[in-house]
Length: 333
Ligand code: NDP
Image (cartoon, rainbow, N blue to C red; front, side):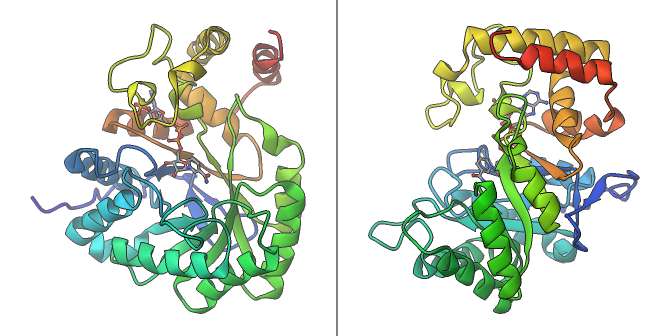
């Protein structure tokens, strides 16, 4: 059946946030296709999730060359969905991709050389059937390639019209500053930094967010639910079909520790007292930072997307709530 997006998709005031000082707005909740959209996954479930997301106003879908498994297959999945259902809505969508991790054998299939980045972007465009992506990221810093070469390739992609904006991911604060300066000088300013940030991983608070504020770049937080750990799902064991149960899931059972679950249990009680689920509390907590443009969630069902978008109904925290969260997250607590 032909998909027709909901007429109500833009009926949420305040759902979009400016990306740093730039003109681009992103939805406060964006959808990533790292897991659950690969060749091993059910295409119709993925398709239904993209539809539901778009119906709810999620205009931003995040990919990378290597998402799958197998690598490349998440881009192919999105390409199918775009062709089948969303072609006429291309101008309402922000599609990002990245290059940095292993994609093909030999010396040119990963990291940060100009050779790799530009070839990879061409491959991504072919897989998705797109003429351009909205954001092209260097997925990780490459210690053995000069930063000017990597940033030069990202800027070249923008100048060639194959990407509208430049982004970086997983760069520390000092490299972010240097990268932003280079990109600005090359006429393709850094729109956004994609960084891991959740209650269980707070490295961005140690300088990166401040740097992004100074540079006027946005920040999009990946794994804001710590891959599902910051929900109630693992409180009674590892459920069948969850990310930690899958052989290709990046969350390993060993990461689901009693120490983490004890904190999850206390956070869950705090969320309930606020009238939220733990997932909603965890997303709202990430979004409390003024530099944060969007939380980049993953999902395996429509219900998860719906629940996570409802985070917007309760974003603010009292000082007492923030203190209680700090106490739960404190080392040794
Ligand atoms: P999350 O922390 O949001 O984890 C997503 C998983 O959490 C889902 O697959 C689901 O697990 C579970 N989940 C989500 N919502 C709920 C809910 N309401 N209730 C219960 N469980 C829920 O993010 P990801 O780790 O998936 O990362 C998101 C995106 O970030 C990726 O798709 C990718 O685009 C990007 N990313 C970028 C990286 C980078 O280096 N730049 C690295 C990693 C990710 P389950 O499948 O078990 O149901």
